[in-house]
Length: 473
Image (cartoon, rainbow, N blue to C red):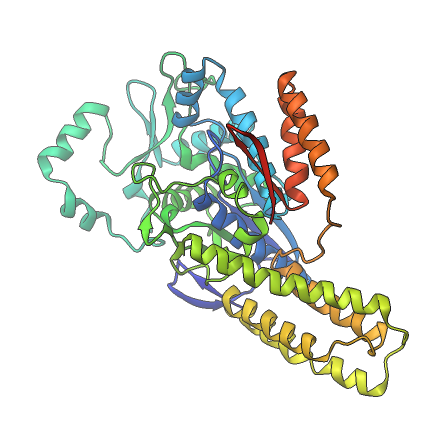
């Protein structure tokens, strides 16, 4: 199995730290609002990596955090006049709903930054004792970036080049005098509280951790000093992941992660996603137009390291492609239910063996840096083969094995081909009426449950001035 390692800028053979086990850390979202489709890409991509590792027989310890203390969370809490913890809890719950809709498996552990403060204090104290960190007058603690000689090895950036490229000496002096930093590239490990902000006691001041230290501590606690794979979006390479390496390796005295994986950016209609451009979509908004399985299938239609363009046309194409696979699976199930023949013949054993080539193609694609685009192509080739050879005069055993083969490959991709039985129109209308009554009674939790229940059955609700409209997807 080959993985493209951002650290070496080349594909490398995957050799785990501990035989038969994979220790994997994926940076999770900052929970101050509904997750957007840019957040969804690493969730889907690295969930698929995990699924393939498990398919290969590895015991995967998959850790993905929630950043539940941050300036954006605090700002949202102040706007609503509620504690920041209320905001983070609310959107963690909403995020988990969206993850379930995308069929992203829950992590082995989903640590929260606010529950790991003690570990952060310990790591910062360790870094200070080793001379890698220092405190300034206001209680802020900084990491001495230049003391770590390998700084820049992940992003392949050189601090001196960065400095000469966009900073002049006078500005650097101004920065130093303003905040007490020894160097403009030193980064925050701990910072003092501001009025109305949540804070924790520390030896340096009442305050909260910097963002980078959070992931280093959570990775170490749940995976150990050395891990196999650290992953996230390519926007995290610098400075977040670079800073994680510096503080983790300075504190632990060991190489932090063997392999660094980063997914490419997501564009909207060939433009960068931005609220100011009006092309910013949350996963929840997409779920009102499409089954989130379509979003997942769309995300896997390109190699994870490639930029991916999101558009209505491409989503419709993904929907059609997904339906081809689902229809093939349903047809196999239907034929198995009506055939009179039970056991495979010798000829049918050859037919089944003929499908091995598509499994091999699928595995070869996934072994080559998790090329899901080629893996999906192999699934389509398998579908064509199954459609050609499936018929009501074939045995139940063959049709069942065909069905299992298709669903197994789809399961690695996180694609669900077993659809629930279609809900009757009358049952839909009854649930919509119950939802209307729940909202009238201000029982919004039940109203949301009904919307989610219908969505899982492929029914999308749209609240309009004329009332609730619904459609099947």
